[in-house]
Length: 229
Image 1 (cartoon, one colour):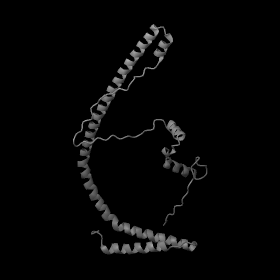
Image 2 (cartoon, one colour):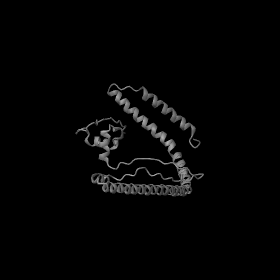
Image 3 (spheres, one colour):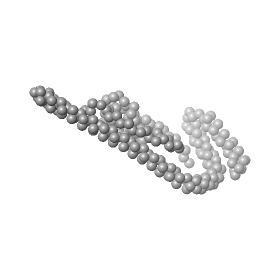
Image 4 (cartoon, helix red, strand yellow):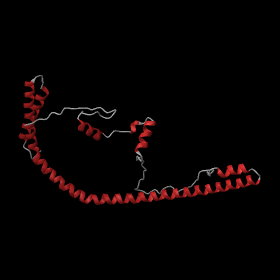
């Protein structure tokens, strides 16, 4: 503000206050009032142009200085930010590898238990057949092999390191849109189906009320008033 003359700013403030008061007092009941409104709008635009002229040059100079400082800031900070991201990615990869190894151990134990159950069923089927109960033996053989208990794998907790905090986040991605929409409808969960407003607005602008909108969608119109010279 020190680079802008005080008297110029004060004059602009007076003009701004006056035009705002006149705008709020405006009542339009006939064509003459419309002409008054048009003149008032032109005057307001002139005042706005004068205000822009007062602040544009010093603002541009300040912005140029800001941009120069910001550029040097980014020049120094961006590589460090990238280095931090690299470190985070390496830490993330380490923890993911721990999860992969734990999952491999769980699967190996599950396979081992399944094999034990398969051997148990085969032994039971052989005994049933040896005792003359062929039907029972066939029933045992045809039964699915299911481990009698879930694998219990003791995996060490991820190491805790001072200065590094780990937090797992969860998000969803739609794999099949048709299946997802069908699920929403079947389970009355339409809250998950948010319309893409820009696409609907474009459709409304294209048909201009000349053709029906999709079911469940209303056409909404608005009137935009512009000042012309």
